[in-house]
Image: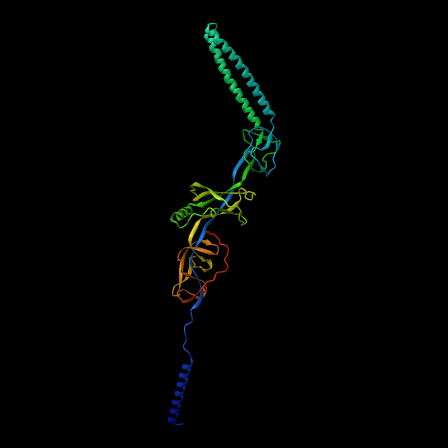
Length: 392
């Protein structure tokens, strides 16, 4: 094959290859951009929520009385059942009264003697008063009779006081309940010597209905709440919504609602806490003194709370909360948030979102910040019972 023929063949092959490549380019369509990812979005709205806080504390009785001996003697009898309810004035113990009865009889005899001496001195002073007028007796004798009368009057008053003291001491042999309530175990047994001088403790009575719940709150939180109420960010809860709910150690909610009755007038300088107290009805005596519990306290009402589901939040390595916001032109933006407190499965936003903005609920993996998305309204599941907002 000569050079001319070879050249012609190469030219034909080149033309064929070029035509083939042109045909391939014409048959393959040009690549197109993928459609925007579909995400579900929730439009931010304001809602009315109860703002509450939970604080730990302990149960204490409304009244507590230590039953102590006020008479000295041998304890003869216990007249109550340990752990039972007792009434004010009910006899609890009996102390041997014989020595005190003898003391009373002696005091009464001394009083009778003083009364007899007084009558004699009264008669003598009356006679001398008439005789001194006619100089039948000297003025000195009359003055002595008058002084004796005054001394006998004082002796009778002292004797009567001794009788009264002996009567009181005899009455103290019947040890009665100073208050109504539930009495604990007896701290002494029959046959024990109890002393008025040492004020021997015999038992303790505690009033359990109503009952107190004592707790503390930081002064910082108290000031924050005060400022929120003054500025209008929070409104005072209505009578039917305000109150103190006690949560027991096992997590159950005490069925009776309490109310705050006391706030201390000073802050503990070592802890920065303020002492608070609530009172609750306790008809079944479920709450007992010393029991640990938590108080759920209604601080106020936030009428314009902005809430978002907790699952929409993303956390940075430092713990900062962000949420993906869809702009009006469907661009995705990462927004930093300041969270106030939780509200069931939601959180209340303090700063970072406005009413009417749209946040991504589902599809965050397909919507990195800066991308364009196709938003679809989020359909919430069936409504669950509302949970008051509480601090973390």
